[in-house]
Image 1 (cartoon, one colour):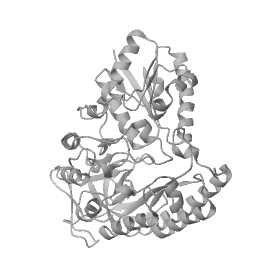
Image 2: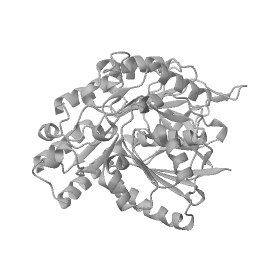
Image 3: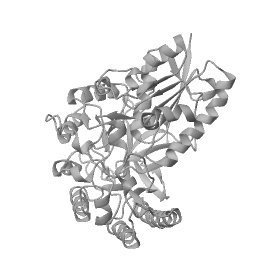
Image 4: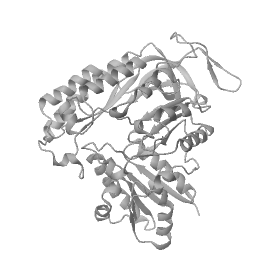
Length: 466
């Protein structure tokens, strides 16, 4: 009998990858993924507790799914992810209609949990860290969906223990997958049509360090050699561990996209120390200078927290000054959200919500100005775009991204999906660019697109800087 699973994912790209693995594993157990929760036999809410807002949204969504369970008592509702790992018993109190709560390192046991629930009913709570989880990432799985781009987890956990972050407590200590396993997984993805991979880890720069085997640069070089793979991205990078060896690749490795997400969190040395970030402002600025020396048009995005305990007006002013000096291409910014179990909970000098809100609005307004200026600088230029899909907003448009991670929308044939195309940028917006396909394209007999050298002056053997 056919069964349907609906997975609702909250939070980061790591959670998206985990959700894809859940779907793929359950496919082997007879569950087909669907896009409507109303048609599901199994609903999985994959949660994130990094910030309070995400946790609130998850419980709010669970309340809506409760109505479906009233209509269909056989419906299984499960919660996974960080909230499940952190608050298993509390979760059952807040949502007694849940059937399963499983932790971040128990995903490999999901089919087993579902089988037990189907056969015996009852409720299951299992959040005990499993040493087998990392090894389970090496197990080949049938794809849950076809896509031009894909995520690949290369490591789990974190050893940095930033004072505001719960990740080391919820996802464990750092552990890296074997290089051969990662390369094999990506080769299989490329064989299915994937042209771009994003390597995931809480701190990808420390890949392989504890195991004393391959370094992150070693891994990148072997992945870049995979035939048919056109682009490589990675996230997240901790500034403390970003090496010169990796920075150099932004200027020499054609497959490595010219974009890095490098969270700074604050522009104040005093606050960085309280956050236990392990670097000073001058160290961060030195990394920015090296990155731009290696690739002058590299796109640099970051994370910023306002209202951290003890943050005073001069600390916030230092953050704004940093933004003016760096001029990030994009920024994820947040009000400090207290998370139980972290060292920051015990810090004095709590900042009021009104002040946090004012600071966040000021910071975001400044970043919008910087982003707008950056995007405007691409008008009139020819950029290389990996075509990802038909636009969700206009069925006549295609959408893709530049190497610098800018979204570009343009009219084109859906047969171009998966191809690298040259697009002339005709208009910039705050969150995207509008373009037109260059006339300098010839369709080859095998339906692949070949680009005649474009007007940017860069030889086609050289990676575009876009």
